[in-house]
Picture 1 (cartoon, rainbow, N blue to C red):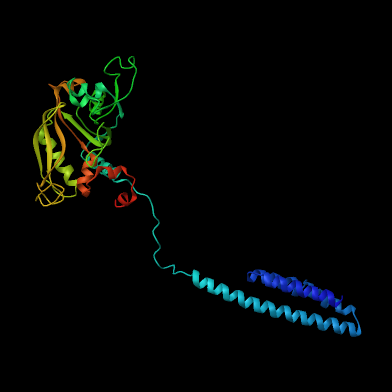
Picture 2 (cartoon, helix red, strand yellow):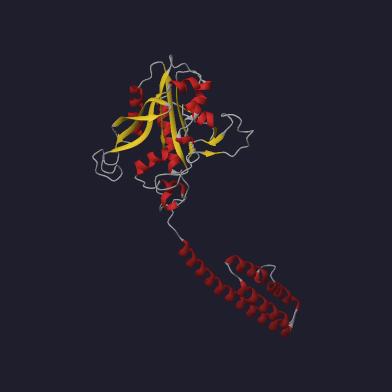
Length: 350
């Protein structure tokens, strides 16, 4: 064992001490050189084989290198501990403090409204029914007592599906995107016997210009109640309860005479403004205190016949209105296009 080898051990140890990034690395350096099987420990074990002056010189040098390694490990250890303590202080946090709530998605305002509408009517014994969005002209118009020359059939209002002459052989084969959810009334009557009460929530389509009050597609809820003695009084009671629960406040309703091909008599439903309480002091009702909500009426005998029911034995009421409009009134929204804009600044408010 010569001094050259000891110096080599010294330099190697110093290099590894300098490269150590944490206390674990430093501990491994200590074991490698000063541990029981360390390289410098091997030098001390070798001393017993030397004699005289050589043993003295090698021993002194080995002790010097040992002290140097221990000193540098000590300095590096203090430096690492100081750094780790500072890091711990910077990263420390109080686990008793409330955390930040993660951002999560939520239901669209129209979906929220649809679910609330369905819950209200279900609690009053109504069944939820769905139907096809692509409908035949017969179910969409003919079965609902629309005259052949009714303007609603015109392509300016209705989105007809392009078909060949063969495919359009009869009225039941001519297809279109439904303009209302009313066709489901007839479909349901064909398959079920009264008494029954149903609502039909769903998407409808119109071929019209888009503006703050109109969209090419929107959501509607249709309702039908048929029985032996169903009357307008039943309708009024149902809707007073529905409006009270949907707007979360009591409102008054007024039935104004109207016209719809599928009901007779027909009426428009107005309710007192839920925003200003019917006082006529807000822009939602334009200062009138009243809002036009939807159309309704007693089911026309021809519609009952189209559904396979005898109008001499059965009668009932039907209603239909826009879900979008109900939500706009409830939340004072002035532009229907906001529902379909995917603008998170708007949607995150609900």
